[in-house]
Image (cartoon, rainbow over all chains, first blue to last red; front, side):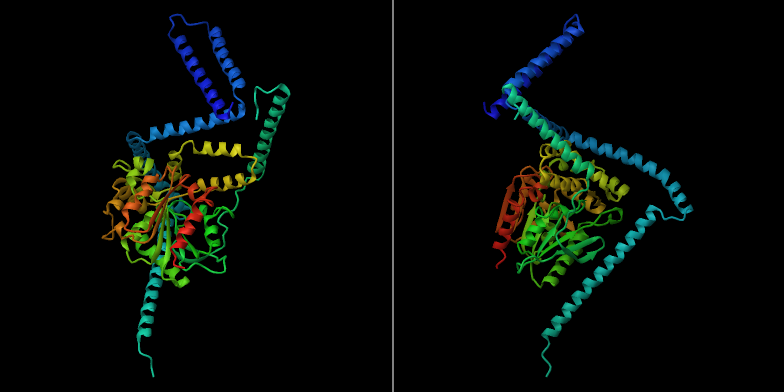
Length: 170
Length: 363
């Protein structure tokens, strides 16, 4: 038996087992008189054991099958989630969630920030916004230096062109 | 292989071998993740800083061959999200190292650790100041008149805008790897970001941009089972030392998120994902229209068949949008990152890219 066909038969068995067990629980839930719990569990475990007995004898590699089953389950879950999350309704839900979160965070920040700033001032420490402003100024200075460097390079190049174009002195 | 139909002695021996392999896996796990959990150092290809502007740094990699190809090669990686050291992951598994060893005079633009103070960095500054000056610096240092320009992912959006505004840009060949051009086919990000309800202004007002933790949530949401799949793969390959080293490097990088500047994110959400303005030729930067038809250079476009961030259709749209007559599109097996940094990239993408560039270098 090839690995592929044995894997297929393993999954066939797995599917049969799921169908049987679903049928069993559906029947148990709908019969007028509920079955004896210990008898019901005995029947269910009987099905489970039967599945594994068949699987163990039909499949050539138990561990490989378990591994394959796990990876396929992950793949199926991933595709399922992608379908669920790939809808406009989901996109809209995420946006609303963000809006609510941000509104709540904004309120919290507005209430807490003056207290935090006051505490930091009392300890003679800079606040987050002061550090941010300092960073912005440093970045601004670096950008101006870069602009100057770029301009001076352009001027140098223009001068070189003028010098190269000038007639040679006697 | 443990086969339940085996005779008892063989079954016992096979079971013992399987258990022994699992014990080895546990041993490797203890050794590599508990006793010695340090991640391998990355970005080791020797380089110098040749230009800086704020946090933005231009690196030039040390020459490793006797001669260099005539046109210096600039890599423009994605802005924000994560750091570009994945391009120089580990010795022997590094696109940067490969290109340097093939004789390219290689430069890389690193955007640095984006934070709240960078909130005003947008496409205008990048396209009008940062990129032209970095290129100018390269030309000055190398003495060349043209460069090879290579945009990755959102870096490709930046290079598209730069070339779309500058038909006379000193660019000999243009390479675009997993770059979204048609944002209407932008996968889950299009669904999540491409509508009016997304509170981009609120996020930018609150955080100054997308902070790293929010970036992490967004990317993990794209593939919720991604970590479980990665760790399952690790367990199955736990007996391979090389696999563990690469896993640690990739895993470190994949969880090392950086933020995105507020202005750039706003432009990305509104102009790109929502209105697809670049492809429509409707994006204006400082009053000038970005026209992809201004891209006339030989162009190499690469997409990944299993890319869930930039699906192949989003990248392939470049082929019809530009006016280049010499253009090549390749769709390679792999995901958004693995296509250029995965285990097969050194056999698939890198040599193909190098050959394509060399054929057009006029050497």
